[in-house]
Length: 178
Figure 1 (tube, rainbow, N blue to C red):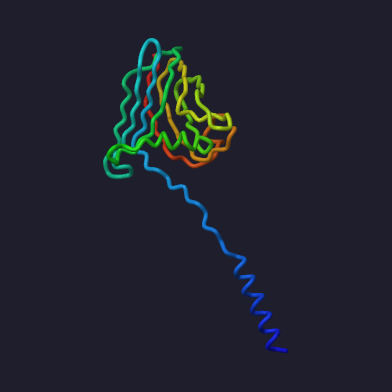
Figure 2: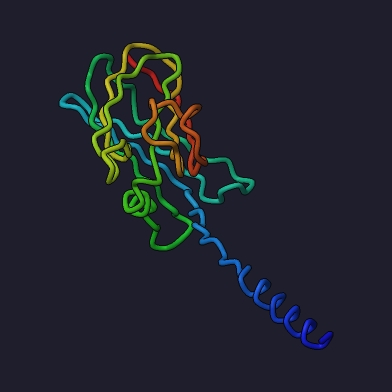
């Protein structure tokens, strides 16, 4: 009888231990973004903002270039491109961001001037993505921060401080609006 209880107990333990098989969670590996390019065009002018850090967190400082001032009250249609230029040819990370649009959002934060922002592209659920956008700045000088967030709460109010998620890219440009 003791042998029979021992065998039933062993079978019960085996069944319990087999039912706790854990499936590893899928890891979405973060891409390296070395370059952020913002292209702005209006009927009157074109302005580009480029942040490039080819050694990522290495010892070389990033280069930041703003091709000229923005005009106050002018509507600029824009696009933002995220690249990994540490590879040859450069990998266009924007394609992945757009393919996984429900998991990403680009945020724009102006400091020192006002900015009217309009998202021109959305994710599959109709929520803002932001790789295509329009801005209308008002006169002033300050900074324009461009931030790519992974898994922000959607819908949100356009404020990255309350949208949550993880920051995939964060760059700040000095901007003059005349």
